Length: 217
Length: 217
DNA sequence: GCGTATTCGTGAATCCATGCACAACTGAAG
DNA sequence: CTTCAGTTGTGCATGGATTCACGAATACGC
Image 1 (tube, chains in turn blue, purple, green, yellow):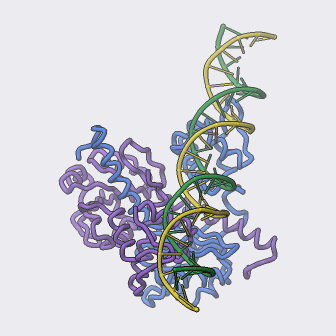
Image 2 (cartoon, rainbow over the protein chains, first blue to last red; image 1 turned 60 degrees about the vertical axis):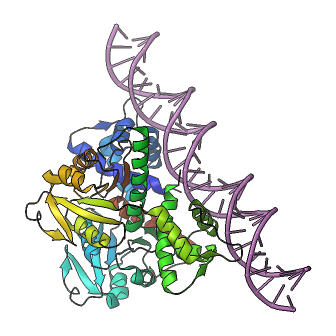
Image 3 (cartoon, helix red, strand yellow; image 1 turned 30 degrees about the vertical axis):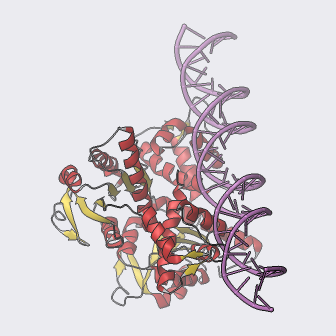
């Protein structure tokens, strides 16, 4: 119903609006928001329409109202809990990155199979043994899983999480996870991302040389 | 010319093919690759066409040839060097994640403004002061930059890198970077990603409840 | 050699996202 | 009150990516 990209942009608008409000601006125009988010102004207005939020012609949008509408639209009325599996370098970085970033969403449990990590806390989040996953996820009512394990374990972990009742997965392992019905899966492939940048960087290089417009190299 | 998504998938196919070859299979069909990459078989064939690589009807593709073609297509003839800025939690995780993963691509320099980090090595990559960035990037011939700084510094760092001659940027800071011509920019927004999963997880939840088909919660 | 079942390559159709352009509306100035 | 510059909301066109569907080609069994 609501386009995926719109959700991503709303999350971005929210951060921009927080900053805008901190600077004291009460009203904001679509083209201002668009410039800061590096998107088209029409796009911004379309996205805002999805919220049911309206602006006034020649008046713009009320930054506070907009922020509230995004919060209400994007975040749940009840608290939403997240679990992270794989407390390696990436897992710890994600825990630190996500800690305290939301009001009604937080990573409440981490899991790892390394006994040295079990029982410790990482960025305020307790680490359990993987064996305890079904029980802990169930008991805490966790609805989202983040997978930061090596590729080999990813599929297994995904199944564990889904069986335990999770409804969304954010996967950082370099494999594409299958999508069981009624579980939303987002794959973030860091290796592909760098491969892509490397490829198009070379293409830019060639274009720059061909057109004569160019950097230092 | 070549679709962005195709490049991402080729990177994925490559990893799958490495595994397939390790298991001893010589030939592979488009539908097999498609199943493992969770995409459509026609998509796989289209992507492979871009390589100029051909298969034989009813015979499939030669896994080795395919792998070589992808390597040749995706990776540069000359070595490609990468710099990472921001050696925080995320930066260190990325250094560890990317270390030794490619043959003709590697992260050769890291930068941070914390004097305690300057001079040390992280995952085999030396950390320099940010002030040294223009010189080091130039001297080493680095063509790609990874930004893992807080949002506030991201734009500045991006400009530094571009001025130093970088042709591609992979940005993990929670802001959208502007795109100067002839520099390819990829924004990876972790916060948006989790927001998106959280949103659609709730939607899945509702659907599951509505349809009666369901998990444990 | 021949028929059959299977797969590749690709034109056409479909779908989704983005950008353009304009009518409708508002607030301010004269 | 009237005019006018400026903004919102949205129909329409554009474009890119994905899927469908089918002709052409091939391996295999007999």
